Amino acid sequence: MERELGELRRTANRMQSEVVLLRSDFDDARGDIDRRWEEESRLQKTLHETTLTTCEAESYLEEVNTHLEEAVVELSWARKEIRELQKADLLGQEGREVGTGGDSGGGDQDERALLYP
Image (cartoon, rainbow, N blue to C red; front, top):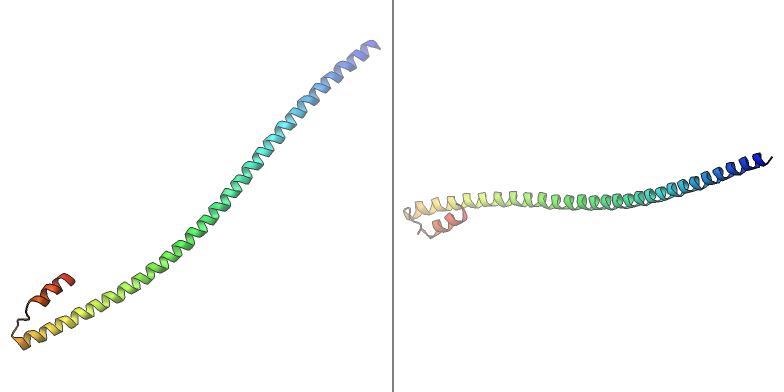
């Protein structure tokens, strides 16, 4: 009986040691889970911020694109007006040349050279 009691005590001690090891493993696993949860939360926050930044950038780019499209239209109209003014100026110059014997004073030509190279 003494022998069996000693055997039971050794078994109980081994089991107690295993329980301590299992609790340690459990605590380590819980700590790992907590760290991973914190990391996932941080990554979710970063993803959310990145998504917001991307949406803001897309909105800004759409706005810039709209302004560029408007500028292209305005530039197109300005070019058209310049061409019309150049044509009118050339027609006026031809009329002056016919009416004045070909000499328009030269000053207008210098200005046109600067405006319309």
